[in-house]
Length: 510
Ligand code: SIN
Image 1 (tube, protein in one colour):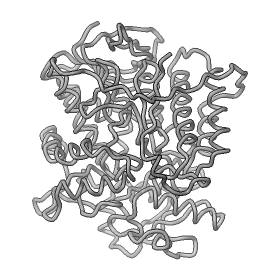
Image 2 (image 1 turned 30 degrees about the vertical axis):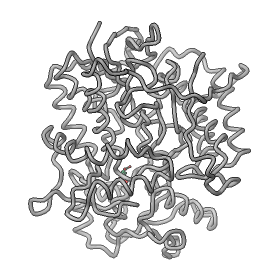
Image 3 (image 1 turned 180 degrees about the horizontal axis):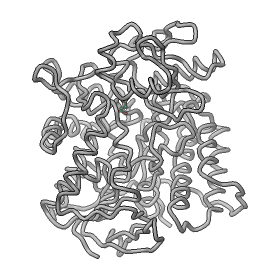
């Protein structure tokens, strides 16, 4: 079957680009699960835009660049913050019910933002509201949606992406779809880690298929760990939004002592990498496995109204946020790296585009500013579609001269290789604090697993193989980067180094 646009992924990036593209041709959305099974719906905090009276896109730009620790592409970030207001208008038009106060849009605060600029919907259910609004519109429109359809490979002919091969995950039958534009919107790889805020579907499929197709992959060593995930024995990881700290929540240790001021003048609202590392250090010092997020000094009705989902979830676990400090610890949350694109979402393979978490236009640099990810998704999804309407312009990002390749590995036996083994290895050796010896062990283990893993024939096997590819890219890049910068911290190289103020790019020329 042939379409103008073949879009892989049904999170906000996939659906938003589909809704834009339907004006210009036939659109197929492919998703490996059901349409609403995606990471977007778990986004709590919101979407950043400089809409407040004292705020401006220039201030938002300055905060984004500062958080990104020397690796933000200024042009990309400028586009992000200046196109924000228009994209918020689009989302409102698509039915996203952003919260308001006295007729004005409500703006929350999050870490490392100098102003309140986080729009939210349903208090702390922003992602779910966006996903529901976009997926209902997509279902009612002329967009074709193939659920349970996993993209196995991108077809490349004469150096150009021409289509995708898919696997029906219910029947295991295969199909080929051709497209004028192939858009990857396949999300992140949070499932690489044992402790993660991400949904089960975040298995790095977009990065892995793009790498196999010869597209460049960049910045994979920069994994963001969210400082505050609920930590209770036997209870699945649950995000406690940074917006809770934005409302005044304090981080305290087991004795009720505030510790963030020991690490950063911004306290609980320091950037996410700083807060996650501070908690990691406190836990290492005390031997405890959690610190506490304390909102007991805030008005209970304000907390339950602003964070209804978190409030209810805590209550279901027997915690009353009004009286009980919430036990928390860091969890893998977001990958700053991904399929390298230019500011039009073009990858280095002509005809292949990427947007959302699987893409990397270096808008986040080494550390993403809170709530810039949903914004990046809509700004760049729209630019992808705009670019496909300009047939006379180049259709690929320029190749990187000094791109690396993952080394080949000897095939060995890999008994008991499964997702949990990958997650434990990554958490233990490629986590919040890294060192050369541990990274080298992880990189060589993952290379051996990569060689040993059988050709995938079903969805779980594809997901495992894709996670191993992403794990290799992350561990190898983290081993090469002999410095600390943003979310990448090496105990053996604890400072940033000027000669490392550059991106690491991988390309599979084989
Ligand atoms: C949060 O609500 O803390 C997560 C938002 C984000 O990752 O930007």
